[in-house]
Length: 297
Length: 136
Image (cartoon, rainbow over all chains, first blue to last red; front, side, top):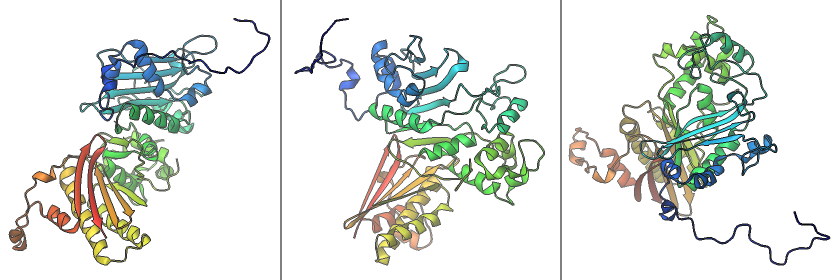
């Protein structure tokens, strides 16, 4: 550290980074309208891809958890953000945790190149680690439930539902999905992509994604059918007969209520399943889909 | 001014699209009933194609209909995410056969070409986009 008696404004501020030749990565020199795949980014040297993937991390969350946006550590030096983007793979995961353990996770973003070299958002989890944990992700035999899609932990699901959670959640959310999606779009636009895709895990997720501007590649009609059949007199409405805690008569009125009933299998009456839905977000465009008009959450 | 609505790719959506075009044209002061009729006809035919062929075999996804009103011009954008088309390779319909009641595929496209001044089609990462230009 240099000692000084006074400070004065520099007449010619120095550069933060010395001038250097342009980045040599071949793909950066190609037509900027041609999208770059995750596979291409992952092929870069570690520090190069770290620079690129930093742009995926929502600053709002880093600020909230007092994490340095460049070094991804806290004031004590411990790391809080982890990047998985191995060379040779088409998959990238970004994980944020307040405690370096799975229990402390507040963010998980998993992306991959799809078959046509577009981008699929495989997973997005935003949960508040300070909130109570509901063990809906494991059943009574410690088998993973895969968010309740493979198995169910009914006792924990009931507790979660009564606490106001949606199917698939283990903790309350962070209320930061708007910021995360904005960041994700900026990141993908920088890579030259015009859209990205996902498969909504639950009815609640599909509804949230509609509000974030997604349209449907598959399943728009199914969402319309679900809305129609949950109206009084409809087939799904009739399934809310009180035969299980997840099928209470008033549940048709809310997104969460419908989602828990669907989790409990009411779609059987339509001879369909919550399966095969696929959504698309066009970068910079809001599709304005609203399959549950004037919905209450 | 851009008007946009997104609906499921099902035949029930066609009347919603027609009402949407009516309302948008009314708000924009398009008084010529022939123009409004042409827009509705072209959108109806294009969306029917998307519903019956584009989303064939799929639980139907969305159709995004956008109308942009520019001075002297109306641009219609229809975006879907189903199977892509190759309209340039579609044969022109046998009009005589159609008039004799032997309706075959391609007649819808014929109507679109008859009613719109320009027809463009593009398939990109963010969907299949059919764009009509109608000069006023």
